[in-house]
Image (cartoon, rainbow, N blue to C red; front, side, top):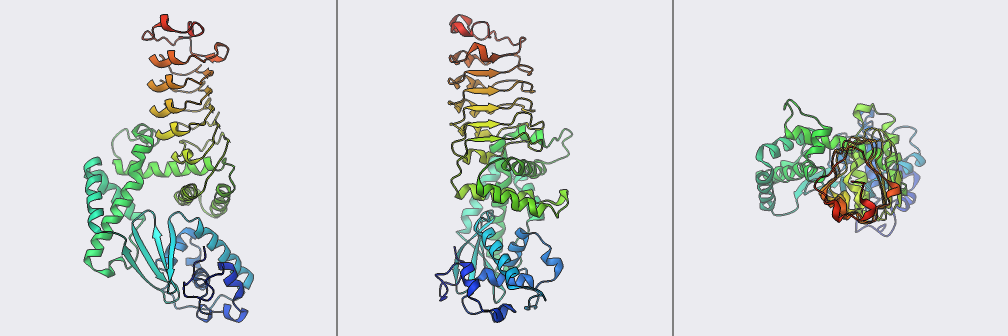
Length: 438
């Protein structure tokens, strides 16, 4: 998508075609560019003219600052000595490509040399005029909608949790500079919108992964952490796990995001790596692209939880996490992988299977041996396609009553702890080949 003025004579050209049409002598200063030049080109040139300490920011922060007006405080317009056309073109190409897949925000409108930048994490718009350096924030919808939504969330999860998450979120994601210019009403609405968006981004983890996963990955035995603190930290754990998990997803677009993030991380201390930004890019890509992968195999010890976005991958028939030594939790929606036939979790630290697990009606082979798992969900008996099952060296003491429904199990490929007993199962109703297994 070309991000240009709709009134420009260059409107039918791509960003790079516009750039290539700019004469060499016009590339020396931002204010000498011809009318209709891509706003991205203007933004990149203005960025190149900035002090070094600002240019050292990572690309995500640069884009945010550029399009929210925070880079317009400098009067410099001239490009640094030694900036060649090739360097500038490469940067324009990179930023243009990055923006197209930038999940934090989408440029969805461009009129009169302005860019409307819509942030998915909050229902507001930053409208920036690249050449003039002006910007304003607009709330997209009726303010009362957000007040009601915020009240509903507080009623559901508790005001303390909501306010705690919001306060923590706003410490690291402050409202854009200049957001209050439109008056007190807009300021209140803006704050309300940000509260709703900030809260939902973390609170969804309760529904997506469950409190057992949150408490397991962000322990709080002495109660010193608030739930808000736990949710913020859990989101970081998920982001780091997702980064390593997606490194094994053999899709060209996902691999591009991974490699670009990895390149940025090379110059960043481990504690300062922005896994959340990388995770957001993966999320945005999966929302807008049809990803079909048959098999994912990884034993990466950095994976502690599978991101819920795994269910956005179509056609997945094999998931092999065998010997991923620190892996512990599946997302609540894992049962949506209805095409899955083989699941290997042996040698991991898997704690439990979600209730939705019984929806995996195509599952034929399940490997859970050598794990600390303690129980199988009641829905386990719905796995009627299951033929191979390995449960040895686990903490499972009893099988669910529904186990008797697994009529296709092959006794030659079933291994269960010898201590497992299940007095609730009526053995008289078991198929002959299951007698003795339970």
